[in-house]
Amino acid sequence: MNDQRSDNSENNDLERLNKTRDQYAFLFNFAPVGYFTFNRNGEINFVNVTGANLLSHARHELVGRRFEHFIDDKDRLKFSHFIKTVFNRHEKKTCRLDLASFLPTPLSVRIEALANSSCDEIHAVLIDITEKKRAEQALYESEYNLAKAQAMTHVGSWSYDPITTEVRASAELLRILRLKPEQVTQEMFAAVVHPDDHDMVIERLHNTIEHGKAYEIEHRLLFSDGEQKWVYTIVEPAVNNAGKVLKLYGSTQDITQRKKSEVELRNKTNELLAIFDSIGDGIIVYDNNARIQHHNLISPQLFPEKVFPGAPCNNIFHLQENRSPQDCPVEKALQGERVDTSLIINLNNSQQRARYIDVTATPIRDSMGEQNRALVFLRDVSTKRLQEMHLIQAEKMSSVGMLATGVAHEINNPLTSVAGCAEALLRRFREAPELLEFAQLEQFPHYLEIILRESYRCKGIIDHLLSFGSMSDGLRRKVDINLALKEVIELLKYQDKYQQIQVSTDLLTELPRVEGDPSALRQVFMNLLVNAHQAIKGRGDIFVSTRKQNSRHVQIVIRDTGDGMEQNILDRIWEPFFTTKEAGKGLGLGLALTYNIVKDHKGEITIESSPGQGSVFTLLLPISADNANPTTAKARY
Image (spheres, rainbow, N blue to C red):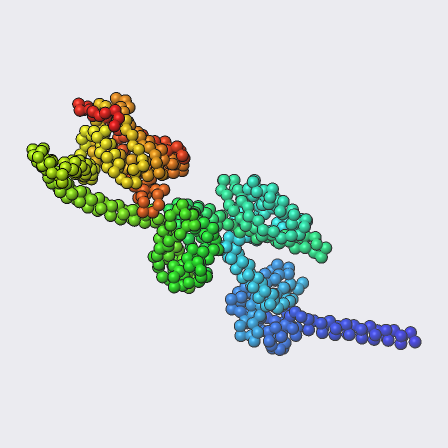
């Protein structure tokens, strides 16, 4: 009985052993890796099913064949060296190989091998690493491309673990920060931040660690040699479900060149703006929608409350219509046409004249030739236009003056004949008194005396007019100021519109003569006296006086009882074409011409005036060096 139990136990043990062996054999043959044994020549002694499948052959076809025949040519020498090393070192070795390309599925494998105790065979494990190798290659290419992209864009990447304080940085970031790989620490990063920006950078970093919010920042770096860089950093936190920051990921870009370009651009922009605003003409740039994009300082002065960014072109042109391509210079310029035109602005303030604006509109073409803009120049030519009109009027007056002088000269001869005939008739009456016995001739001598007196009076007026209107030869000579004043006064006192004005004189006897142009000085006195007459509305008085101011100057004073002038008018009274008279009643040249003539004679002229108090013009003219012939005149007349 005992023997039977012993046999049964042995049979059970053998059965369990066989079963276990079969299980291990199955696992060995169908394991996910290939198992091989090689002899010293690299011949295959044994291979499992998975190994045979990797080589795409049956197991019995592989036994006895050299394994190197299944290896790519470039790796065969490597395998031979690997086999020798495993047998010689008596330790596990690893090698990576590419299998031959003639196999249906070329593979990359890793071999791990170890020699047996007798050193006559090695046991090897063959693992398919094709996908892993592809992934590694893809990762390598990705990292290579990333490194190249970072180098090209000067962007470095980094990560920071706030718990361990570990910092990782890309090669480009190390180049930007001028650090070596062994210097990648939190302290070294902080050390290159500019002292003026250090606190700001650290504060933003701590806020992100505490609150988990991404941020962007620009700041400076300062190196030991004094070089500065500008960097732009974007920081993104990685947080867990509890909102705790686990890691910070950042990208830092070197923007030094961009900052320099920005500074240069700002400087160039400021320079262009200064030039833009210093131009005396108005300049406006309209966008492709005919709205103001830019303008200089002059434009709003020409068109107050109409020129501002975004204002449409009809604020200035074609006021009644929103769009008017036929008439609007801006619309035409946007269509590619250059336009030169003019505007007349009628001001609401009656104290100011209309303004004339020359307009030049030029297209600004974009690179595609589609979205044109318009550049508009506005030049205020009011003064020029007024000068042209005044010069035309002055030319007309000059022509009229020349005609009047010619007429006066022609009238002078008949008057001389009339006066001569009247004198002859009077002489006949004196020589033949019996003629007066006829009642019809009794009043003839009286009539003849009137004709004679008036004829000589007319002749005197004409002589003064011819003297005043004579063309200047430009030569300087000794001028009798008193005589020149009297000639002008004589001409003016016969004007009907001045009959209500009393002119009184106080001319110094023995007044020294002045070196000057007689015609020009008569023009000065005429301008001042006409101005004094026109300042008086209705009745009034004008006082003219001369005296010796000192050893070097003669003083002429002309005072009127007119309306006087405000200070703002006094400030502009010597300006050419400035006048307070209505259109057609004055050119605004008289006082400007007077000022220039006096200055040309090295003299001085001043004015004192206030509203309701009249005006006083005072002239100082230098005395001629030779005073042998002073003026003799009555004190008053």
